[in-house]
Image (cartoon, rainbow, N blue to C red; front, side, top):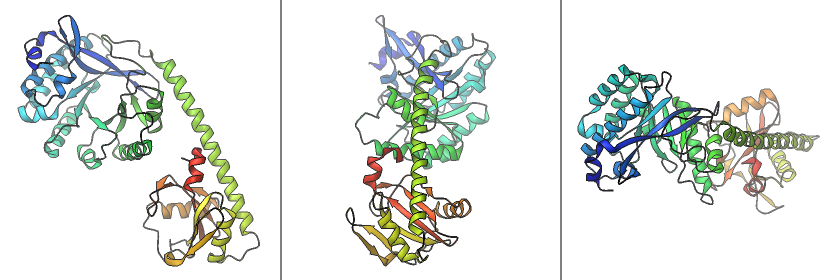
Length: 404
């Protein structure tokens, strides 16, 4: 697309609206405003124009203002208009020093009927190379003025969480369009888990876009997506549509996901009960001495485990590591005896939970420091002073994916 064709025909620019649904009611709560231009009788996307670094920022700003103006004029005709999500190029605001002009324009739009608490400014982050402090000041100013801000174009290979913390966004928008079937999903999952945890800590909602199929939708739902967007639910529209136009589809799919999660959780509960019974049976009649107990437990659980050790209530390891070398042979490694594991963030909370509930528990998924394998750890209170930790065999986990 020739930038001159766009800037010389700004009057032919117009907005389209991409529906955004929430996960609580399966309702369209707002629309992302996207730009189109009518050239030679054909509506063309303005994405190439805005994403081309060679296009002067002055051109982009003029086109942005026209899109904003027309979108607001349409939305303001509805007394109770849905939220509008406007794309903002931070480089343009910084280079042209036009933040004040943007704010003045939207103050004027409020007088025309736009509700400022239903405006979200989405900052495109993928190509911003400027000072993060400049960006932080802009976002804080917008939030202080009553608008919400979102960090957009956070892709699943972007783990720069430090920037997100400084910017304090209301929403973090994640693009799933680069998540393809058959790719290394574990890498995506690790990044999405980190983003999900981080969003909760800073009080931001996750907004997933680029949802093109049920696999994408499941990924967004499973990782805490409050807002959902993509052609799988709705394509871009010229006008606002029935807020519940996608409810039946979303409700059916998400109920399927819930049923799958219920089955998975029930299988995990059954596994925990089986492990508890196995440990109780193994301990029966035995002297509660750490090293012999670790050996007994390792052999009793060899079908599911690959490493067993015992710690005290302070986190000191009291037994050797019992390590499985093949299906039925174990060896011990006493190098870890006396080491303290209380520095692991989950450790003491897990100990206290077992002490009071007197039942076994299953850790979250994590990567083993030594093997880098994705594992989970089952642990059980032998008595008030000794706690056994059983690292589940990665092969067992892979064969029983309800544990992953």
